[in-house]
Length: 397
Image (cartoon, rainbow, N blue to C red; front, side):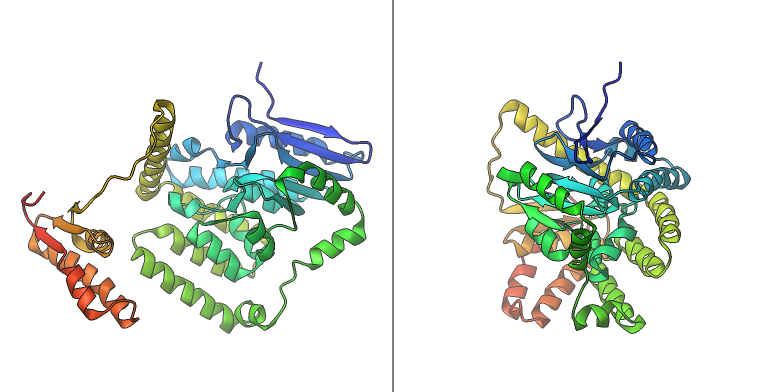
């Protein structure tokens, strides 16, 4: 018999409590089976007249939902399959957003990727200040973009500038920063989180208080209007965002650029249209070699963490003074720059001098920009460039 992940209870006051608890797992992950279970449950709740407000929370300490199941993402082999999986997830979260009563995501722990997209589909969000509380959409780090509504719902909630910053960087926020941004509607102390959730839910049963909470989300001041309220401001915002992405990625990673194109093209369109475009963009990225390679990097990192935990290994800092870089060119030169800027000697190896020349040019270009911005003195730049050498064989390795 398959154990259930979702557990629903209804209080006498009409507050439904939906608890997520993946059996046999340390964290909640939105895999195919759980999404199917959630889909069926949401269908059953459409006509429920007992529930006046639904609270969604987790039984896992320090975790709301860690994200989608990356193993399932790794198995996507072509764009059409990726787009289909994206649409299936969108359909489930659209049902959540369309429920005939308000919904509250009670987040006290990691809320990332698909978990964040589930929370965005809720009417309200509350976060606890648990040390592990992190809210974000880190999909670009896996070579994809949020595919279950994140690129559409987040900008509508917190504004274009804040949404682009979160999605393009893949960074996450703690409870306080999420509240200041408007990503969550309330914050509570970890020690009293359960009690504060019940209090907040009781307040949200009143339509007037719900309206007051929603008013706080309205972005005030001249800056939001200048950046988002007119075509010229939006054009400037996207232009600067694109420039920043290209400076950081050198155009080597397609996901951030796809995010920019998607949000720019769908910002003023109805939500269903934007979701359709999101699904196509997700599918195109999910089948790329870059996505598969970044997933392998993620799995390798997780395997090292588990191995260290099992063997009782305490990570130790090992002094490093020299490093070899196999392959020069633009990327190898960037790696050599990073090493030399940290005080290490870097030796690049490639098959021909043209590739090595591009490596030196790439490192010099970065140092030149830093010198122009007066973050580095010319003498310092010269010394650090002298720490980079090149070879066509393995001499020096």
